[in-house]
Amino acid sequence: MVNYPRRLQLARLPTPLTQLTRFKIPGVDTEIWIKRDEVTGTEVSGNKIRKLEFNLADALEQGCNTVITCGGIQSNHCRATAVMGARLGLKVHLLLRGEKPEVSTGNLLMDYLCGAEVTFIPENEWSGHAGYAAHLQDSYASNGDRALFIPIGASDEVGLWGYVAACEELKEDFAQHGLTPDYLVTATGSGGTQAGLIVGSQLFDLPAEVRAFNVSDSASYFDRKIREDVLLWKQRYNMEIDEKALDIQTVEGYLGEAYGVAGPEIFDLIAELGRTEGLLLDPVYTGKAFYGMVSELAKGEAGRLPGAKQVVFVHTGGLFGLFPQQHGFAFNEGHSGH
Image (tube, rainbow, N blue to C red):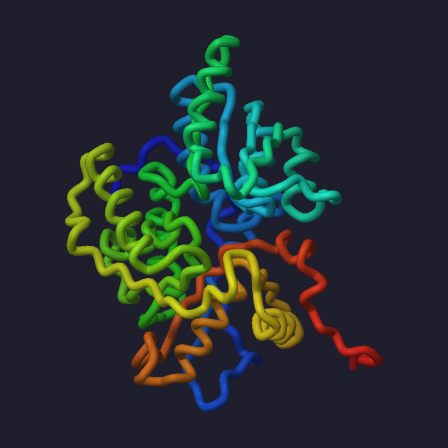
């Protein structure tokens, strides 16, 4: 029995687990199942809300009336925080990496609609964003407010609980569908979902090994980050787990040109899944990770997913990130739509 810390019921759970039936990889007969975490809610769609159930509970428990967090201009995490801040009566201050765009679309539009205060930090100053957040906390405190800083993606020892709890849900999913998946596959951008899946798989004795495809940074970064977060989690919540013995498998090679920049092969795959399954991925996270998974499955025993009879892909959302990148879809002129 796992004793969870205080948690807010914010996400629509459990999310469905469904099998892809029409999408095929030539020469591969692996069953692909999707954990549909893009349906955790409409405005809060995606994986971040699972983490925020714990991070925002922590903010309220500490008596905070303000939350400061950070991310890219199209951050799904910042959008989910802005929405939930409005619902819970918390002021939200977002630190976003880059210059303010001429037109606010996608996640940024929703940040503004939900009343978040937004500060843009240029790329060349981004390395100091945590210091800026600490300065903001002091500034709010001088006005009688109490602000909690939640790091990028809510990926810390508190947010880690989100996907520990998801593993308990997955255990029930597997029993219900009679599955013994070989792999749990996810995108990793800030490490929190990956960390929670690795720890949760161990706590709930899931049969699947976790494989994450990085959409930022490197495998060595996630190895270090996850061990650090799990150590803090272990100390804060008095949990027994050996963070040094964790099996952290991050598959490199599918990041592309940069975080948030996808090649034509990613857009083509997103469109193919939309046509064949009505499943919508995004070009920042899930599109790259799914493309990586498909590519590794096609390699068979030589790939990073050897012996895969069943895989579960965790759909972490990101739908709103499609709209700012719609130019990436090469829909053929004269295509009849039939």
